[in-house]
Image 1: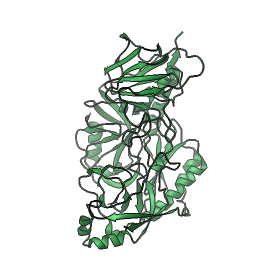
Image 2 (image 1 turned 135 degrees about the vertical axis):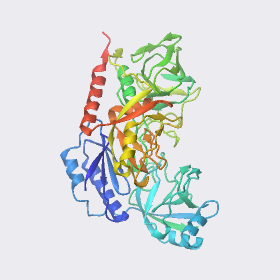
Image 3 (image 1 turned 45 degrees about the horizontal axis):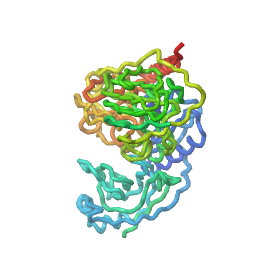
Image 4 (image 1 turned 60 degrees about the vertical axis):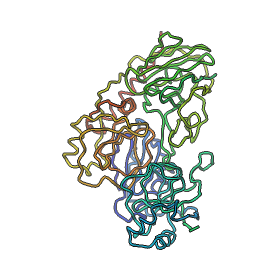
Length: 210
Length: 310
């Protein structure tokens, strides 16, 4: 692996080759490794799809131990799988206004889209975009769909959506450009809970048709 | 021990230095847009850098003191008075119970900070007192302050010694921002990179705490604007398909899927926080070693600046 500076306070490690699921598993492993080593110069970590952003404390230099960990071969061992969450989804209708378009773009019936979307156990690759928003990895490749050319100004909370090669769930009502295929009633993020985010990177998600 | 908001001003929020350590939950850092000014204000009243103060945007609030407090205002110069007599800028002063602190319009940049000895004592959410406006939590009730809000102030230890800053920042409407090129510089044509570094960009009125939207010559690209989402650092400049750059600020999402041409160096993030709609910005590329030297110089000013008045 190698890293590059993002500004003067962050380092970006990227795993470019490998398929998305394998690269992401390595990023999650690396993120845990960096966290567990407790480097004094590290302020925060943002693991994402194929990258780990290492934010440094103000004025801190990356030490040689951190640099050598980030430059070493990507960790081989996959992190242990997290919890399995079964999430009930109302597909189509008002909750999933883009289901018909997704079906048409892929020359599938709406029934086939739902069957494909519920056929997989997804892995939470990372949380991003908004607190608790899961980027789920494992979408069947024939459901991968570009984002809307013009994002919606308001996506309802609980919307289940497809964005590129990811599927995900909007934790709260926000603007958004993903294709909405259904809705669920899960509270994905609540600061009042001990563990605010319902899903953690590495957790497994299975969608069930209501 | 409290401050009562009589008039809230345009956008007044409780902020500290941000929510650190929650990136993996998808939670943005938030915190002061000009962290240097908040730290300076805190030091002037004898607080820790990490204590919470008020971030005031373009038009300030009217605040009634419910007890005696030591205050300091630091950041951009605003019209400001305490019971009609002008308050000092970047120096601690004492205000008595019943007095009214009025902040009017900014005479310089976008933001100023009011620190109160002891710090604003709202509950911490995910280890920070910063307001996260779009999600509606943190700070005071998760929102901008309104009339009749009463902000608790924590008791302070020891005796406050009045302090004044020796070296003052001034904020003008035309700024050069130093940047480190990348991390996706290869997505842009050499003409696009050249335009970015040679043009003047105007700050759009659609800018907010998430980012400064800039208007100017579009930045030409040779690869698509969309990338697989990756973590975003403060000051990173993303360029969506329309070629108009956005400088990411305190309330930025933790990840984003647009190419980034450059990142503003940490010593110049205060200038990003002080840029207001209509200001003109230019970008100058430097290397990481130079950026780190600029940061050390800036810290030295802060370390030596908050001197006691003898």
